[in-house]
Length: 93
Image 1 (cartoon, rainbow, N blue to C red):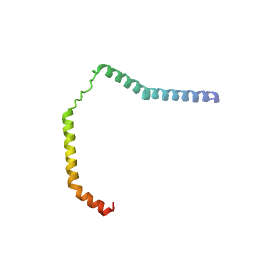
Image 2 (cartoon, rainbow, N blue to C red; image 1 turned 90 degrees about the vertical axis):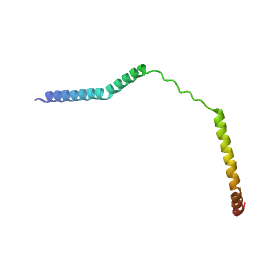
Image 3 (spheres, rainbow, N blue to C red; image 1 turned 60 degrees about the horizontal axis):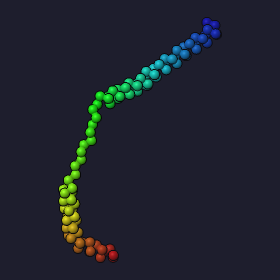
Image 4 (spheres, one colour; image 1 turned 180 degrees about the horizontal axis):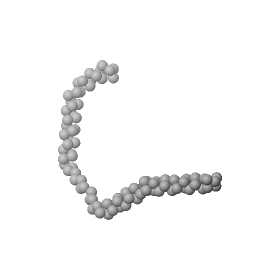
Protein backbone atom coordinates (compact mmCIF):
# COMPACT_ATOMS: atom_id res chain seq x y z
CA UNK A 1 0.00 0.00 0.00
CA UNK A 2 1.17 3.45 -0.79
CA UNK A 3 1.45 6.08 1.95
CA UNK A 4 -1.59 7.97 0.64
CA UNK A 5 -3.70 4.81 0.66
CA UNK A 6 -2.51 4.01 4.18
CA UNK A 7 -3.48 7.48 5.37
CA UNK A 8 -6.89 7.17 3.73
CA UNK A 9 -7.43 3.75 5.30
CA UNK A 10 -6.42 5.01 8.76
CA UNK A 11 -8.73 8.01 8.38
CA UNK A 12 -11.59 5.79 7.26
CA UNK A 13 -11.08 3.40 10.18
CA UNK A 14 -10.84 6.30 12.64
CA UNK A 15 -13.96 7.94 11.22
CA UNK A 16 -15.82 4.63 11.37
CA UNK A 17 -14.69 4.14 14.98
CA UNK A 18 -15.80 7.67 15.89
CA UNK A 19 -19.18 7.12 14.23
CA UNK A 20 -19.63 3.83 16.09
CA UNK A 21 -18.75 5.41 19.43
CA UNK A 22 -21.14 8.29 18.73
CA UNK A 23 -23.94 5.90 17.84
CA UNK A 24 -23.36 3.81 20.97
CA UNK A 25 -23.36 6.92 23.13
CA UNK A 26 -26.55 8.13 21.47
CA UNK A 27 -28.34 4.85 22.05
CA UNK A 28 -26.77 4.23 25.46
CA UNK A 29 -27.17 7.65 27.04
CA UNK A 30 -29.76 9.66 25.16
CA UNK A 31 -32.30 6.97 24.28
CA UNK A 32 -33.01 5.85 27.90
CA UNK A 33 -33.54 9.45 28.97
CA UNK A 34 -35.96 10.01 26.11
CA UNK A 35 -37.79 6.78 26.83
CA UNK A 36 -37.97 7.48 30.56
CA UNK A 37 -39.26 10.98 29.90
CA UNK A 38 -41.88 9.61 27.55
CA UNK A 39 -42.98 6.98 30.06
CA UNK A 40 -43.26 9.49 32.88
CA UNK A 41 -45.44 11.75 30.74
CA UNK A 42 -47.70 8.82 29.87
CA UNK A 43 -47.91 7.75 33.51
CA UNK A 44 -48.67 11.29 34.60
CA UNK A 45 -51.48 11.57 32.10
CA UNK A 46 -52.89 8.15 33.03
CA UNK A 47 -52.75 8.56 36.81
CA UNK A 48 -55.76 10.08 38.57
CA UNK A 49 -55.46 13.31 40.46
CA UNK A 50 -54.92 12.66 44.15
CA UNK A 51 -56.71 14.79 46.69
CA UNK A 52 -55.08 15.95 49.88
CA UNK A 53 -56.18 14.21 53.04
CA UNK A 54 -58.38 16.28 55.28
CA UNK A 55 -56.80 16.86 58.66
CA UNK A 56 -59.27 17.34 61.45
CA UNK A 57 -58.21 18.72 64.79
CA UNK A 58 -60.17 18.12 67.96
CA UNK A 59 -59.51 21.33 69.85
CA UNK A 60 -61.16 20.11 73.03
CA UNK A 61 -58.98 16.99 73.12
CA UNK A 62 -55.82 19.05 72.58
CA UNK A 63 -56.79 21.46 75.35
CA UNK A 64 -57.49 18.51 77.66
CA UNK A 65 -54.04 17.07 76.94
CA UNK A 66 -52.44 20.44 77.65
CA UNK A 67 -54.34 20.74 80.93
CA UNK A 68 -53.17 17.23 81.92
CA UNK A 69 -49.59 18.16 81.09
CA UNK A 70 -49.86 21.34 83.19
CA UNK A 71 -51.22 19.38 86.14
CA UNK A 72 -48.42 16.84 85.82
CA UNK A 73 -45.80 19.62 85.74
CA UNK A 74 -47.26 21.27 88.85
CA UNK A 75 -47.26 17.91 90.65
CA UNK A 76 -43.64 17.25 89.65
CA UNK A 77 -42.57 20.70 90.81
CA UNK A 78 -44.30 20.11 94.15
CA UNK A 79 -42.49 16.80 94.65
CA UNK A 80 -39.09 18.18 93.67
CA UNK A 81 -39.33 21.58 95.38
CA UNK A 82 -37.48 20.37 98.48
CA UNK A 83 -34.71 18.82 96.39
CA UNK A 84 -34.34 21.99 94.33
CA UNK A 85 -34.06 24.14 97.46
CA UNK A 86 -31.41 21.79 98.84
CA UNK A 87 -29.52 21.89 95.56
CA UNK A 88 -29.58 25.69 95.51
CA UNK A 89 -28.43 25.79 99.13
CA UNK A 90 -25.53 23.41 98.38
CA UNK A 91 -24.50 25.26 95.23
CA UNK A 92 -24.36 28.57 97.13
CA UNK A 93 -27.10 30.38 95.25
